[in-house]
Image 1: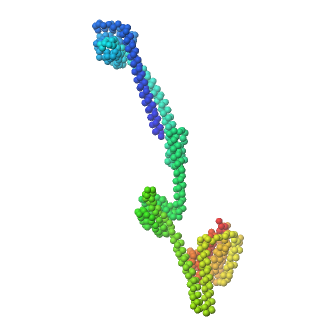
Image 2: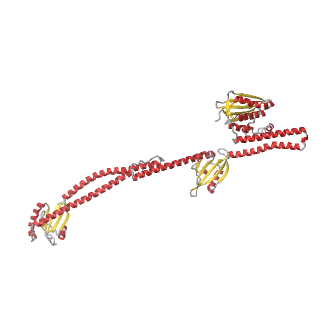
Image 3: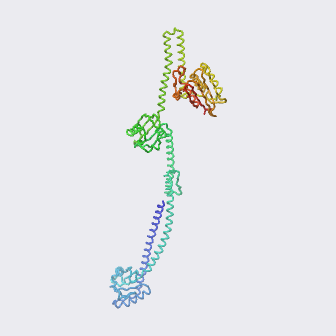
Length: 591
């Protein structure tokens, strides 16, 4: 901006200087011409007076020279000018400064020729003798006669030129002063014009650097003020638009970061331009490693690279399921969708990665559940049907056999009823359709009541039930569901403990916020390989013994879900032949 200010100042000074110089030249020239014209007019009047007062003699030029020379010398004393008398043929009759006899013929002098032609003639010539310019003015004594004699006056222009020189001196000094004043005024004007432009430029640079709060201070209206207002309006518009863009970007980033599916955007050249956080987790690469690089450079398995290559080529929706083994084993559903910009211009593909491992696992579990339910239901139904057919076939006549068969039918029907009840119960619990009614439970008395309910079952096998409950403990829980949890675990302990064994129920406080419930038996124990699966539906360690004990295979699964509904955890430790311990930790207060 300084260079613009300097250029503007220089242009204004140059224009002023040229204008003043031109005016000086015109003034000097006009002054000189006016001065010379005035001098000419004065000399013409003097010669007319001389002609009117002087006696003009005629005769031989040689005899007239003394007379005219004397008159010329006398006239110079009065006029201070050189006086020359010239005959009609150009002979010099007398001169105030030179001897007329020695002077050349003046017939061809321009002022003489002009005087013969128009009555008055003039000429400015440089005098080598005097080394100065002289003004010659001549008039014809008889303007009507082309061969008339001529009176000529000559005056030095030294005074005129001196006056012109003084005029130029004054003009130059004035010009210098005016130049300095003009330079100062021009700089101030340029500064006043460029300072708002500098501010506008500075604000424009701030806006370019994304400082949309920058504004131009508009002090004066006009073109520059309108420009400043336009810059401010533009900044406000950009600020609003950038705020919207940032909000949209933030929303888009939030959506991408919180999507359960991974998203990868690849442009038409195969370069990765976007990768979401979930996609990073699934693929095992960070966005810094992948963004800006070609998809082929990513060390990913061959099937994915081929799928992307095919999608860029055919530009159609492609869906596949591929097993990934890095960074962990997963089954991914991949959807490759072509992207088109405005004007139906192909812009690349969008790869959506969905981890369907859990979904497929649930589908498998569901299928296994259906198969297990079918199998579990089929067994008692088949038994009931078989014994009923036997009775119908004539065995009913044998009273002892009939009683035995009817007892089996009753037991299998009861087992079928418990199985259906447990299936419905588990379905309600898993679907969260079981309402829990939380209330304070005094642990000591609650445990005693629960154990009392199980004493009959334990007595059948001579199993001792021990209670070790810390006094003064309270827990916020659904009392019925908590009793269901404990009775299921106690029943399991009794069922899988040999006669004469022991089942212990212990309750203790972990800290102010949690309690721990331990149910320990001295039973057959659980093999280590089966421990991770014992809470699965219909999973049995010893299938034959489980059926003989009347178990449905759903009890531990129901217990696990009820514990989780109480926001607690359940775990198990076991040693084959020594027994098992189930550990439940529950929060004292439900949030």
